[in-house]
Length: 235
Image 1 (cartoon, rainbow, N blue to C red):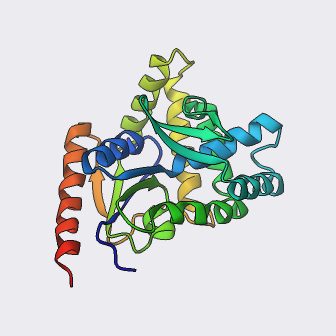
Image 2: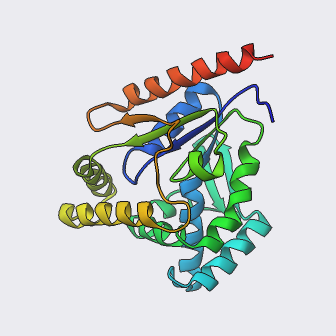
Image 3: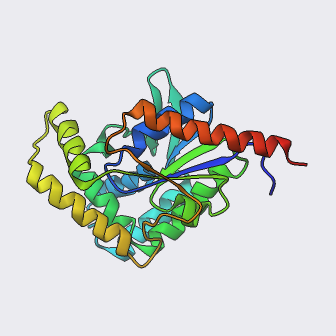
């Protein structure tokens, strides 16, 4: 279909700053934000709450299918900003722990889970004017996205950012452990059989290792504005 406003796909490894950047980009553009990482985190949290192991492909797959059928994971905008609801429960904070991040990485590698949630993601952006972040937005979810970006940073920078985030929350944080976890998530995300993390040929690479969030956002928004003008001028 021909869209008058683009789908903005922001992919990249864990800890590259996708969540903060995506929120700022969506706010600057006035677009809807769909945090696909939050969807997988919500599945991991739901599994944990009912005692289904993240490595249980059948159990987690069935759970994901039920959540999709019920439309149990929703994004809502409140005075406090955009929130994530899991069966009506605000889990915006609960899904941001390091433990749930690990769970999300595991459940997202399950083909049945990815299939169950794919349509949910596609429905959210079919008309354009939406910003999505994840690992496979530009490669699998929206291969026809008009504005694709691959946001990354060095392992050291990403580990330091995660360490600072956990310390700020008062959670245990061992920098060396976090480094190992970042490397392991990179390996797992880029080598999984289904929808591996990859930079598509038509995605703009943005390395945030030495850039502030405002610089990253400005670079992405600038490119999206160019795409908007092109779409508006199309017959």
